[in-house]
Length: 330
Picture 1: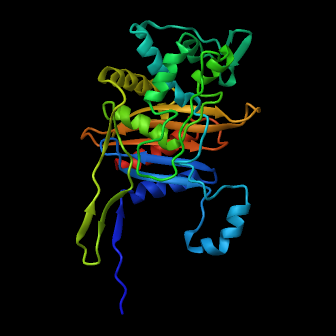
Picture 2: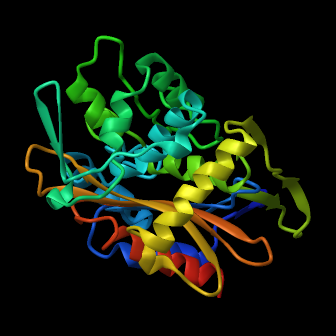
Picture 3: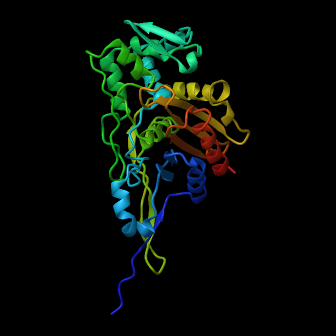
């Protein structure tokens, strides 16, 4: 008359990383994803606002009637404008079209005018090389091909359920204004934190994308192994030379750009911050950071952080990523 004892599922999650990500979000809604680039193991996955699964039956009516969307896993289902983190995609598109990309120069004065449309950098600050100009020089069709090579407009290769596809919608009829917006991650471009974590994970892994998974193995009640889940490769989405060039750009963000606060003598950081406008009020922005870190032993972690309405990525999302790097490499 005894029931069969169920198997134990052992996840890939790193408890300390998960706790650091959860606490580091504070009162902000948003998501954090951390991956092991060489395997695709999900080391942390946080979505806020959250709910208590122990009382979900009692709380159900309020969960489905509220406007906070606690039941949405923002890490895999939340679709956000990527802001400047999308410059990774724009840079790759430019590299593929222009083998002499290293010679590209454009002096950003804080604003840029094209086709009767003016685009402003955050705070009208002059930043040197401008990606809006870079975007206008691209073949729109080939730009779209690069985005799709990085799995925009495609289902993501993962065993996780209910993962939304990111969107890239430029066409040959798109206006210069929309191209300019898209090249810096605004306009109609939307992505999930999981997707951005996968892109930087592939960059960290020499161009090879490993499929994210969250169950490491299962064991029976006698502590005998029932099933071991193994890493699965999706394949290479970047060439070796492209990977190297993007790594160089992302390293510069941490050494001389908006991510200098991430530097450490224990590990090396590669990343991109982002500040993404999400409505007509240009003061309302999500804070992004995407990137990875590696130490002398070759241990690596890729991270994507978005904090809704938190402002500048360099001031909010990047410091949380640093906390996670510190914990992982301690």
